[in-house]
View 1 (cartoon, one colour):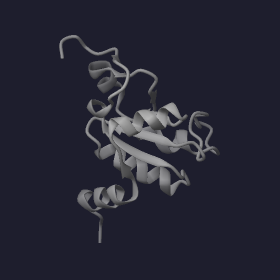
View 2 (spheres, rainbow, N blue to C red):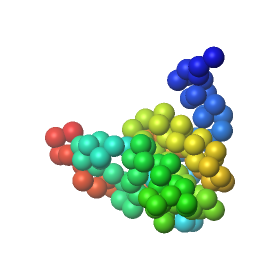
View 3 (cartoon, rainbow, N blue to C red):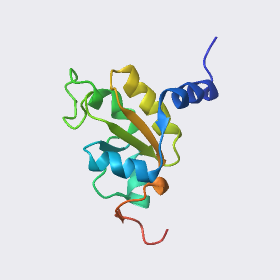
Length: 127
């Protein structure tokens, strides 16, 4: 039987710990990668957390796999990763994917609005 989105989100939320902005700040201060997986137009419109690394959700598997020719050196299975998207759904699914790929410490911050740290850079003033 095919999986539904709800089933996939339930499994992802069960596998990936949801954290608040304060915990995310603490983890990033200790060396975790703050990973923004939104699409480029979303970043252009809403800005991004200062210091966040960007990999669009559609490229995550290619950037996360050390054997891929598209591997991003910031992505290491031994480095904690704090994911966020716009509201948390894609971050949960991406977090489960990273865990399935062998990443040990993966967290879901939720959305950009949940980041309580540094200012957001590049925010559209019309928002």
